[in-house]
Image 1: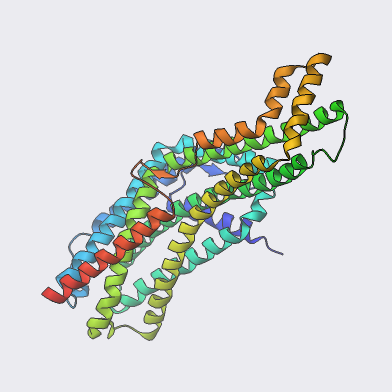
Image 2: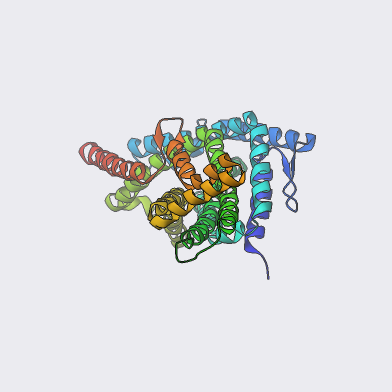
Length: 413
């Protein structure tokens, strides 16, 4: 049976290399990365070729005038603003990848090391990753089909190259967000494993109550064993959170560009829906296949936005679940603390290292305080946080600006 995760990873890697988005090589079998002269030269050539095509495509031409002769100046302005923003964001993403290339390599190496320690992580984020790749692929294919069908009667080599340039811009944005999606999904998988281990450890710790009479030596041994496991959990959580924060800094510019692109595109899409209702002649020249492809693209594009958003939300939920699990430390049997104190006293009289046992007694509290001092906040250049509250505010802003744009259209056109 074909492993869909490996299949999509291979397709995504080849797609990123073909478009020049990935400027280094990755061994898909081992996960090792390396910078080669061939990968560098090809990526640089692909990026320069894309810039040349876009400069020619967005210049004035007779074909463009014919395509826009049946639409209002407001439609043309909205289309150009969104197009220029997408192109600018794609070029900024490419520049960021050249500037942070070494950091990308170190980031992949760190995730690879964590994956080798916990290979079951892939199984936990498998469904989300497959869904993301499928939805993104369908949306991109439908966008290409709509672009071809719209200009089918006027299709030339120059226009075909222009469509290729626009699709490459879309590919660059999709590759960037898919890589970020996969990294966050991988981190969420580690959090799920950490929460499972922490839940099991809490169950064992709560079982150390007065009903299970043990000698102090046995009790201390059990506490030391649990403390070692908790220390491993805390260390793994610290590494994962450090990777997430480092990744947010590396992807900061790309995240900002993606948010701006999604924001203006959603506003433009709502306005287009209104325009299709108001201006019946806009779709008269469209074929049925083109209209079906456009509808599918519209649906899958917004599903992709929702999937990307909830990937962030689920990661924050997993981190919050860890806080709730650690709060169960206060629900330990009251006699447990007394037994710990008596165990420490006995250890002191027998010559056992007291600081170590003190650390064991307060290990849970230390972990909880560490999380409280260093909360997980996904920020974008310090401008805003990526969470449900920000998403709700952005949704309200999209609706308000869409209504304002529609009102302006009704008053002036």
